[in-house]
Length: 283
Image 1 (cartoon, helix red, strand yellow):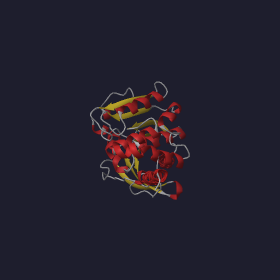
Image 2 (spheres, helix red, strand yellow):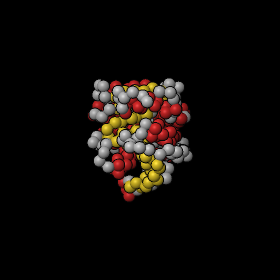
Image 3 (cartoon, rainbow, N blue to C red):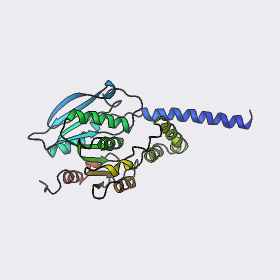
Image 4 (spheres, one colour):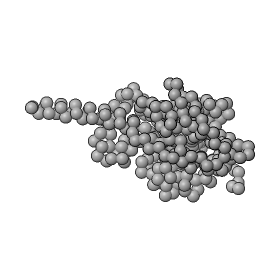
């Protein structure tokens, strides 16, 4: 076997393996958690989604007159239960909370090749179900990527936007995530995986990145980020913050928190309360 044949064979095998990996990272892992709401009046819902699908959801209504509604979008591979610890704090502040699982997550309808764009479609379906009154929209990680897309396309439905564990550019974030998950695979196959994904999405991998959408966002925005986040480092949040119009966004860094731990740290509840109701003294 000649040298050229060996090289071409190796390249073909590399390309084939990278295509398989590009598919697998879109499908796995799925790591749902179990943590049902334990406050207020809990309604189990099945909401209509695009493609004739359905989204499993909870609406949790607090005692008394609600101050508003907060819609929560979980991150990659998780489900609605992942957002319960966050929603509980909003419920204590008097807000109705709506938590749902994206398609192909939890008990929602299956969907091939989900991404922040399909997360945004699911958020939009929930926003439409919520009705005319604008809501607070909260997205975590990949859900933050979907949340800013939905907010940019539906400014009349979103009065405030909260992005936790977010990132400025999708391609950069995914490459960093692959390297964090497995250094060898991230370095050896990450660029090829992103090539195939970008080809599939017709060059749109970075087109709706948060930092590209941020200049057009006009509602108030709160960024929340764990100081010890290794999936998406704090520098990502600071670069995203700089992309919003001056004075429209603020950043709360949760000291000691990793990617999904901000809501359990001191200062989280106060940061959320001050963002929702600026100038109102703490109870």
